[in-house]
Image (cartoon, rainbow, N blue to C red):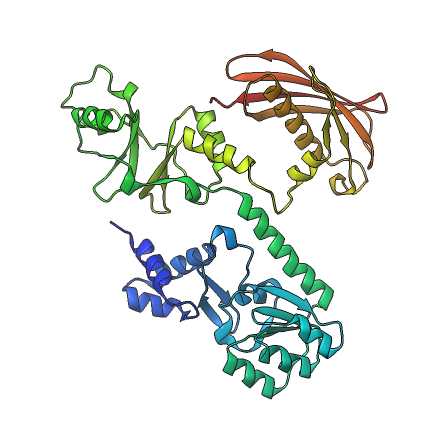
Length: 435
C-alpha cells in the first residue's frame, strides 16, 4: 500500500511536463496537509521531477534518463545562473541542447543558433529576436533587459528569455560546470539502478511462521528474507541461522533481527557494498523515507554492478580519475608505481594535497592486491607520514609492501620516493571484498 507521500509523488510524476504546481493546489487535490504537500514537492525537486524558480513558481520538468542526464532544462539554468525570467515562462521545462556564446557578428551568430539551443549574449536586441525566431532560448548577461516586443515573442513561442547579472564568461563557466557535474553523476551507480523491486522479491509478514520461512526458502533458494508489517513497513530480517532448532509453528517476529540495516534508492552502490561487507550481511533491504520496503539487493548484485561500471567509458573526470591517469606501473613481479603530481592535485602551498595522496596510496594498494589475485579491496584506515614536502610536478615512485594477509584483511606498508629520496611513508589496512 502506497503512503500519502508516495501518492503525491506519483501524482506529480503523472502531470504533463510544463504544468505549474503549488503546495496549496497539491494539498487540496490530494486531501493532505500543506506540510505533507511541501515535503513531497521538495522530494520531487530532489528527484528532478520539478524545478522551483523565484517569482515564477514550481514547474513540472522532464525527468531525465541516465543516458541523457547531461541535458539541463531551462528552469535549471535559471537557478544555476541566479537568473530572472523576462518572458517565455511556459517553455522553462524544455531541455537545453547546446549553448552558443554571441561574441560575433549577427549573421555569423545565427549560423550556430538553432532550435533547442541557448544563445548567451549581452544587450543586443536584434540577436534576441533572431534567436527566438530560430527556436532558441536567450540568456542575457550583465543584468540587461530586452524589448517588450521580444518578451511577447518569447511568450508566444514558449521560449524563455533569462537575464543574469553575471558576465558572459562566468555564466558559460557555471553552465559548463553544471553539465560536467551531471556527467560525473551519470557514472555513479545508485541503488535505484540495480535493486530488485519488491514485486519480484518474496518477503514474510510478522505473523508468518518458521514453517512459512522454510517453504519460501525451498521455493526461492534465498538464505534470508525481509520481514514486513501489514502496511509493508520493514521491521526485521530473518536468515537460515536464525531458525536453526526453532519450532515450526513459532512466528518469525520472535526470532528475526530487529531494526535491520537498510538502504535507500539514492545510496551509491559502492557505499552499499562497503557497508554490506563491513556489517557481514548478504542482503540489503531498500526502503523509502517512510520505512516501506521497496526492494532488495544482494552482495552479488553489488559486485556485478561495480565490475560492469569499471568497463564503461568515463565522461566526467573525478579526482580519482585524474590520479589514475598519472599512474604508471613499472614492476613486473613486485608492483612499483611511478606518479606525476599535477597542478590539480596540489593544495594552496603547491604541495600534493592530502586527498590526492591518500587516493594515490589507496589505488596503488588495490592494484598490488589485484596483482596477487586477491580481487577488489576497500581501504579501511591509514597512517601517513610526510617526511619532506612533495611539490607540484614531482615524479614519485611508490613501492608497496604487503606485511600481513588474512582471508579478510591485508596490512600494507608504502615507501614513497622523489628522485631516490624518501619523502613519505604510510601504513594501510584493506578489507578484501569476497567474490
